[in-house]
Image (tube, rainbow, N blue to C red; front, side, top):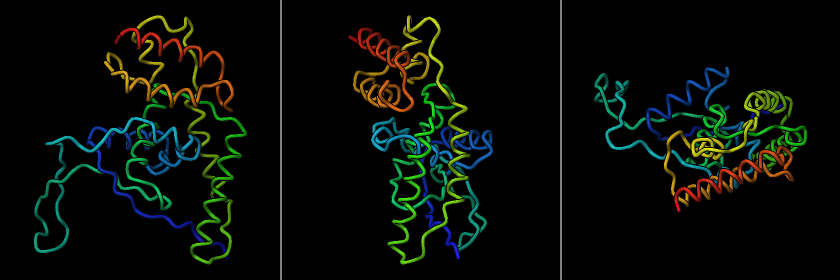
Amino acid sequence: MATQSVKQSYTIPCSSVFRDAVLALATKRGVNAADLARSVMLIVPQGAIEDYEDPGDPPPGDRETIVLKSGPAEGRPWRRKPRLQLRLPPGHSIIAVRKALNMALHFDKGEVKMRVEKADILAAERKALEEAHAMKKRQHEPPVELLQSREELERLRAIVDNLAFEPLDRGVTTFNEALHVMGFAPNARPDIKSIRAKYRVLAAIHHPDSNYGSHQRMTQLNAAMDLLRRHIA
């Protein structure tokens, strides 16, 4: 008999704005927040996620009010930090999950783009198989059926396919266009450290030698990098 994939509950502290944006995107895509994080972690190299921007914990004063449902204080309001509750396979750090969700939001906004090739899906399937075997080894259980994992991968592939990158028609000619290509918000004023971190992530995605890169995208990324670097010099 097939066993269910072991998952654990993750509590991801975040700003209320970030939480609401993630939940809105999940609803828009017909999935849950865990699916968004999983889609990024299956497709994007781990190093690229680690180098990505962390939206961080909620700022001071950003709190949500809930009503306690048990204990001596049952029925009383309680203010706490905003959070997301996700169920994912064990082994991920809170920060890595939060960065993956941030990348999913940027994919949807067109601030970061990638194209999924057949080779990427095969690689993701291999990764899912490795995770299943690792869980089997830990639990001494029979091999996990991969049919559910393959269906999940196809669903995640469809999500990422909807976010395919289209280079700018006229190339990168303005500061705001450079911000867009590099994945910064309009009118942002990033420092050189942030620019270099973004460049490392995007270069791994857009480089022509990668499975989903292209010469045109890499050229525009280099142009954006040069323009931003000159602007802050």
